[in-house]
Length: 339
Image 1 (cartoon, rainbow, N blue to C red):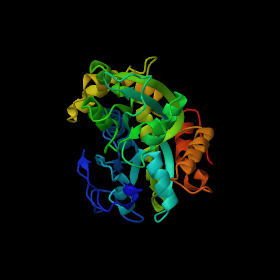
Image 2 (cartoon, rainbow, N blue to C red):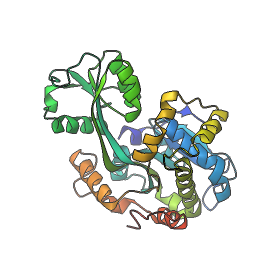
Image 3 (cartoon, rainbow, N blue to C red):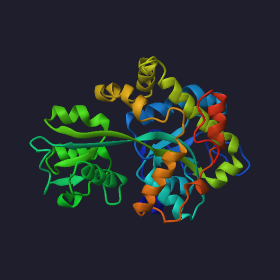
C-alpha cells in the first residue's frame, strides 16, 4: 500500500520522465504518441524487453516518440498521479491498489506468469537446522515473505521458529544482505544461483508456481479514452516477448538484442545474459496472459494475505480485450480471454 500512498515518483531514471503532458502523452481526446511507463524493478530482462518493443514494434503501432520509462518503488504513485499512463509491477501491490480504489484501475495484461519459490542459505548454514536463524523475504508486507513462509512449511519447518528480518529493496538486496552475514536465509530468484554458490551458499528450495506475478495496469479512464494506444502498448510488448524468445532454446535473437541494449547504454553482466533461457522458459509471460485458474489462486492468496477484502473479485478490475485482440492477431493461445 505504500506504493499507492506515495506522492512522489522517486526514480532511477532509464529515460527522463516528466510530469507534464508534453512529449506526446496528450490530454483527453489527444492521441498518445509516446509510451510513458514506470515499473518496480530495472533488472536486465525488464529493461531489455521494453527496449525491444520501443526499438522494433511500438513505432509501427503509432508511438512516434521514444518511450520514457522509469524504475521506482513508487511506480504506482506515478501512475495514479499521472506522471505515466501505464505501469508494470508486482501483483500484490497492484491488487492492494485495486482494492483501495481511490483511482479506478484496470489490469490489461501479464508480464510474468510464473513465480519463483527459491530459498537460499549463506555459507555455513545447515539446511536441516534452520531454527533460530535470521531470514528475509523483503520489507514488511512484501509478498515474498508469504512465499518464504510457505516454502518453509513445505520443507517441514515452522516459519515462526526463524526470525524474519525486514530488508528494503528487492531480491538483489536480500542476496547482498545474506552474503554480508546480516541474515542467514533469504527468498531469492533464479538469477541468484550463480553468485550464491560462488560465495559458498546453497539454494535449498527451487520451485516454480504458475501465478500472474507481474501485470500491466492503466487507469480506467486511460483505457476508455485511449484504447487504441493501450492496445498498441500491449501488442508491442507481446511482440517483443515473442521476438526475444525465438528458437528452440529461446536464444535465436539473444546476441542481436544484447548488442541493441548495449548501444542504448546498458551493460548486462555475464550472469544476467546466462539467465536468458531460464527467464524466457519459466518467468516471462511470452503470450502476455495467464490462465483464469492462476488468477483465481492468486486472488485467494491476496485475500488470505490481507491485501484485499474477503469479497474481492479480480474479474471486476481487469480488461483483457486488448490482450485478446493481440493474441488473436499474432496467432497465439488466447488466455485468459475476455472475462
